[in-house]
Image (tube, rainbow, N blue to C red; front, top):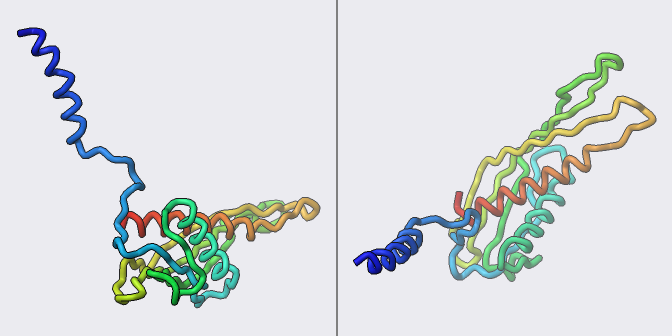
Length: 174
């Protein structure tokens, strides 16, 4: 009887782990089965910062290509789905001042975007987020001789953050 009990215990352990519902996060596929290609055209812009409308689609395209099986095509007419976006606002303001020079030494960037992924053939909205707020901070050198323009690097980091957030949200319908 104890030999039978010893044989059943590992089997029960394996069966209990199979039904626990554990899965690796970020692997869910919530996209419709008919979507194989996605177009990410330039974003509309109602802010005063023009570079984001170029950087955000490029970063989102790289994110789709590196994390998913979807092909990204340049022409929306050749895509199964189209990701439309808009930069609603861009604000930057100093957060830290140098007491000696009375100049800003750190800047906060706040960007609000909206995105919609639409099935091109049916017009059905697959995913939509009207308001996505992203923040990025960068420092400014107070020494004139060591000054390095950091805002472009901050916008690049912000674009990567937006891309990760948007693609994850689309894939997991979060």
